[in-house]
Image (cartoon, rainbow, N blue to C red; front, side, top):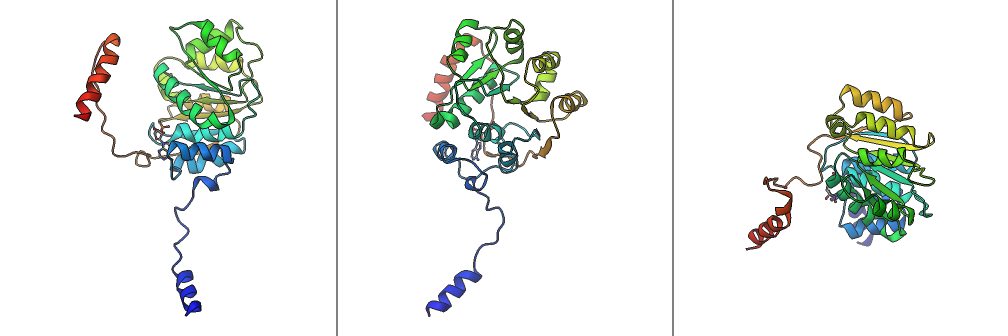
Length: 257
Ligand code: AMP
């Protein structure tokens, strides 16, 4: 009887498809704990493809929209590879300060177990505070292009040499007229570095930029259907900046009653 039962179990084993878990991607235990704490159960397609390459030190072009899990696709392996030695190891450039804050918060969550600090750098707020936070041992800087270039041109940081540089939503940055700033930012960065470029679309200027700043990149393309969340309804309200907090409170009230 015992033997028969075993035989049945063996023949009914599920097929080896779609069974990749976060444990299979080469991430350290500290990072895997952060993945669990974030509530992620299964890697999204871009994470499955990108994480092993990024851990390996390869450059990447990722054609992916927001909602595909691209922040974790570069954030998790980047944190995984960090020394967390008090120097800036990673620079992420994003088109807007909202995205910069979002990316910074997410990477902070992944690096908490390793003590990796993140700092957000954008225009319209104090240089001093941003620079102090960096000098106090940040591992990750998430910046918008204008302010980052300003800081680099004015030589306001000592020994700024991130070993991994990420351009997030490169096509948005192109549309917003940041291409020249981005090219100039790279003139201040180490030649020996890992570079990752994410963009939803690949217009010619982004392809040219990619060929200039990336070395033998791996190309990863994710279709719109392969998003982490498919049941999100998106709405927007046009309000003044000063109304933002009240509007959020009213929306939360309305949603919970
Ligand atoms: P992104 O495309 O990076 O803007 O991520 C979209 C959302 O998906 C974020 O709220 C992430 O926290 C979430 N997310 C990322 N990876 C996963 C995953 N593997 N499982 C579930 N949610 C995820």
